[in-house]
Image 1 (spheres, rainbow, N blue to C red):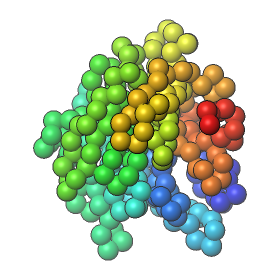
Image 2 (cartoon, rainbow, N blue to C red):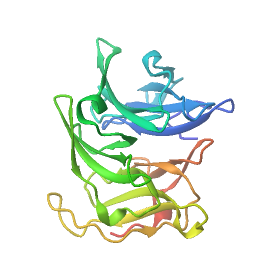
Image 3 (cartoon, rainbow, N blue to C red):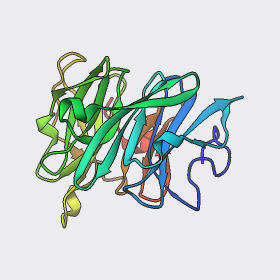
Length: 244
């Protein structure tokens, strides 16, 4: 799939792949795999000699809903689905092991999933309310605090799986409204403010893309990544025709 991955490293014929994320330096990749969407497993890989080899399962993440790797590669925030609830958890890497899961929902009451770390403390995610809304939170000393519900992006449909540009120029997310194809797919909103004061435009559908979620951009490879529910797909960033 990518020149930096060995064959059958990311998308396997025997499973489906969901959320994918990378450390800021591009040396660590994390994704989830499953044959049961509510019970996914976390896999991680490290780039060596310019390539990622076989991804290894993280044994402490054998029954999650989705998750994402922090930019520094030392933390994973993830969601566990329990009936209609989506509990948010955090796990850290210590001495090359992933240990001591912490429930962020227990201390805050905040539920959700489909995370994207802009920085090690700034997280965009799906807030589990109103059928699913895009929101922003901060993580400080294991304290998860809601900052913004990004109301201009959200409707009565399900909005989820945001990707925030590293320079905060735009945000891409998925919207799904039953029975309305015009509101099913990837949407983009541009920031007409600055990095401290965001002014998001009304979202527009990226009609050149099929339905999917898990948006992620690898700028060094010039690729847009996403999941179509079966595999991790990619296309050149240029196809998105992003505003300069």
